[in-house]
Image 1 (cartoon, rainbow, N blue to C red):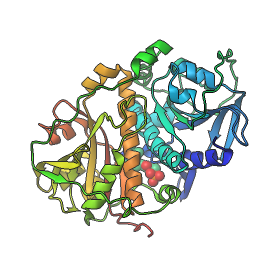
Image 2: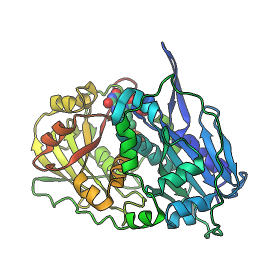
Image 3: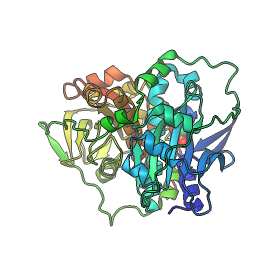
Image 4: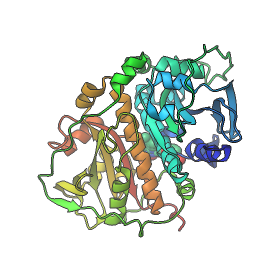
Amino acid sequence: MPDLEALAQLLYLTAGITRHRKHSGGDIYFRAAACTGALYEVEVYVVCGNLVDLEAGVYHFAPAEFALRRLRAGDYRSVLSEATGGETAIVHAPLTIICTCTYWRNAWKYQARTYRHFGWDNGTLLANLLAVATALGMPAKVICGFVDADVNRLLDVDPEREVAFSLVALGHVEAWAQRLPTKLSALHLETVPLSRNETVDPALREIHIASSLNAAEEVEIWRGNAGLAKLPPPTGPIVQVHPYSDAEMPRDPIEQVILRRGSARKFAQVPIELPQLSTMLDRATRGIPADFLDPQGTHLNDLYLIVNAVEGLDPGGYVFHPDGHVLECLKTGNFRAQAGHLGLDQQLPAEAAADIFFLADLQMILERFGNRGYRAVQLEAGILSGKLYLGAYAQHVSATGLTFYDDEVIRFFSPHAHGKSVTMLVATGKNAKSPLPG
Ligand SMILES: Cc1cc2nc3c(=O)[nH]c(=O)nc-3n(C[C@H](O)[C@H](O)[C@H](O)COP(=O)(O)O)c2cc1C
């Protein structure tokens, strides 16, 4: 049974404020996980039964005060078990974390693209959460299938502005007594306005509504075996990846790695080693416990790489086959300039040692998962990115998430990537500015 101290650790290393920088325009507070524009549109809530040192309730995590604010007293876990159609991990969880996303916090800058950012920014945060839960010996499962309106009502968020995006069931106890959910009263809590006006692109709410699940029966049908086709076996030249063995792996505890993490602002144009890249790829793709990735190990995104400077690998374009632990070479050559262009004409992907793009067959995913598949694939991309960040920083290598030109990336990796869409990009390499402390 988790106690308050374990919960505090989980919350701090997932969504806590870990760094602070003075800026001409004021102070910037950075959090444990990477986030587009450092806008932190993801909020974290806790729904729990009685824990050691924490009474049953529904709580909001306030990073600025590093405190939990109780929204409802009592055990409301049955609302989540109903809303997830009796998802086993929820039924056995002493606590569940709910992540919500607030449109305007991100959309004032990124407009409709914000919907992807919900998945990405929620995902990087979940990568930390999963890693810390593992370190604490706590089973964790990401849940994307739930009745949206029921979870939003439990938190009493205004769904025009803030919406539940993912759940994580944490811990395992014998199933708690099932109760029919009590009627949920409105909380009538005031919120501080974010701006004088909020003019959110209507497409955002439309995408959210179109990908909502409306009844527990719908959720039950939705989850289950992903049944998706895998990458075709390699036909081009292959290079075996060589991850470090457990004995060779750096031994820094997860909290050190998370506190060390910070997106690279400039890469040194020096190579990283093949075992370093291999370890990042291998550890990121060992499977995510999630209701849409059944059986575990299934993945919706494939990893495509532009290698600029990795010792033991010719520069070029590659696709990673996690099953065979091989990189398949799609083309060789120096593609630094193209990488810079594909990554929205930024220097970072041109200077990086390697750029890792996530590509997914959206058509196939939407056929299997309906519109909810769009949330799942973006969320998975975010989790994989967060894992790559952690894999890099664990080895004193640097990384950053990046945005990109969709169609041009597909053209670059075609014909192999034909029919796919890009979901995310992570660049990795040695940091030019401040070599990471040993
Ligand atoms: C999905 C995603 C996309 C990002 N895109 C860019 C980008 O295009 N250019 C950039 O310089 N940084 C990008 N970043 C890095 C963020 O600006 C950075 O995470 C944020 O400022 C918080 O800082 P930190 O990661 O150092 O904690 C991205 C981060 C994420 C998670």
